[in-house]
Image 1 (cartoon, one colour):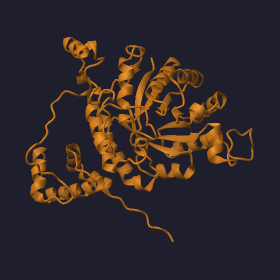
Image 2 (cartoon, helix red, strand yellow):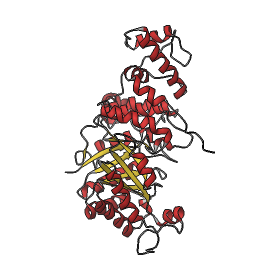
Image 3 (cartoon, helix red, strand yellow):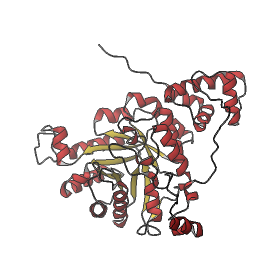
Length: 422
């Protein structure tokens, strides 16, 4: 039976959240946490952009060294020749999603009268179907091992053209077809039917990329995946940690996993990628909250402060007698329940103005030893730069990463703006 896989887009769509963002070191840590959690692929950024280049190359090198393994690192790219060539100029990039708007609204709203959807509309103008075929062929020629074709605004694209666009993706040699509910427009029933039809007619694995403008991103993602699997193909759900993303956000990673594993219509009937390890959820959610500077909502599924809190007499009594009375799943399953140490006395921290003694004290507490003073001072300098880079105190895992992979940290922290041409 086909499976459901997780393809997380925190480092691509999550970082596009207005007024928020991640430093490149933080994006790297997100990739490491996603790998530990067994996520199939991280859409880890925009490989054609200049300011992402050092981060992109460093993370691809971490993948080559087996640090980011078995997770796949996939780039996002519009279907434009220049951006595709720039993306694959990064050594080691093997996976990508190529995106093009498909609805009549977006085609006319973005391209005006310069581009048409089909060659029949005007043979003298560029059309979306040819643009798709040329883009997939170019990415494959440049070394892409897996290619997803994105239909942006698929939810508002008429059935006839969406099917034709998906057929073109398959015929061009794409590996997956991404159904984008870009504005959170679909309901779970509609997206189930559309994805099942696409699966049965096209035979390509289907990705679900759902936004939360109507509060249904998780429901639509799971329903769309169900439709794909019922139609005979694998499904890939796009998620973001803590549901972050443009406007009202993307489908929340933890909620999607729990819905597949625990809901009445999915539990025991549909297969989630066996590598997914929900016990890493708490750690990842807390780190993303810290890195983005966005508190986890008190009622957030699985990881919110009140997700396992009971106060009313009937609920407290029932939960104490048998947690299954009022808890659908155990808090331990999400990696919760371990005591957290909070310092209330003297604290030595590392920052951009730290000295060697305080630095050694902090790393000693992490049980990290240095071979000599020169090595310690090199790492100290990187830690100083990292604090400037993130503009917040470094976490223990960030400090460990810098000490273990100083060459990669140095590259990730390096930001060299291009010269302005007059």
